[in-house]
Length: 479
Ligand code: CS2
Image (cartoon, rainbow, N blue to C red; front, side, top):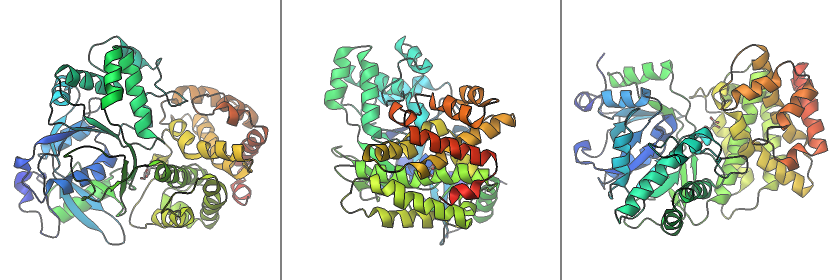
């Protein structure tokens, strides 16, 4: 079967939406680091909408560590299909990426970042891609940051930002705006501080210039985007009549909250559906703690119960009821009120999205990188509950399930996907439940002192790990 390209696009059935612009007229205004499925399903769909009226905002996809996506885009003239799998499915071909740069393309990235027409740099490099320490500041001992401090071609994303901003300053150009699109609370502020810290280690004036002139708004990004699988490739090929190896799937719901957004004469992202606001914090915390917090909880508990997908987990009555109680009785009460956002209603809408029968979102995918995700998703809530004097028993359950997951995979000799996989496996090997909790609580990048040192919480996590080790999941969920 031939591939999706600009040429074969002409024969794609009319029921499939196509770019509402001529890709040949598009110039590059955005450089994106990490063009994985989430970026292609989320930010790129917004820019694709913008391009219908404004050709300045084509995206350059940068993937210096892995070549797969870039090769697929290259073979398809940058085109790919966004399959919206929901109660009302639809498909749309996106053409927003006009440049793609894979491993070995560092010189091209440097040149692009220096170009004044490039006004925005976006990123989805996952939590670990920012090289932050447990307290959210740049980890100066991270091997990529150590390498970047010596100069040469950057290894870290923050290193690329510093290099790009330095080139623009040297040329008398304005800085680009940086939009962090990963699930970190205060993501823009953290990335700004990290960039300034790395710049300061090199040139104090550059650091000051970045601090004074560059914008790093906070963003909240949301759309459930399971990894592409064979079923998706087959479905898209059947509907398009051509093969698409860069296709992505997501639910219909999508949200992008950015604030404060101050780019003069920038892309009309609001017109494309984004919410531009002064303060993103309230939305971001609600999304991270409710949606992502419940996702991780369902993942570790569901895997312990032998379940496969989020929809399966929601179909298990006790687990679904536990998730709802966790949100309404433990997570929501320690969130500050947000104007225009009803946290209880938001919770119900999220649970409904999790039930989407049209999508197979693997619990094992959500279980990746737990050491990086849990602090934002569950432990911020736990710290707030501790400060407020609220009970923490139920909040301990999903964290116990994460520890049980690490222990079970270690015992089975299966590697987990996590930047701390090796030390976590060392800690879990041969440990009793109490030892496991002690050793994992010692990971300071995951558990801050106020949590690790909280006696009742520690006891509740230990009881949870014991119950899971003995197969008593249902008793735990009844809490
Ligand atoms: C998920 C998220 O994989 C995960 O950890 O919780 O990717 C989630 O689907 C998105 O944040 C939804 O916006």
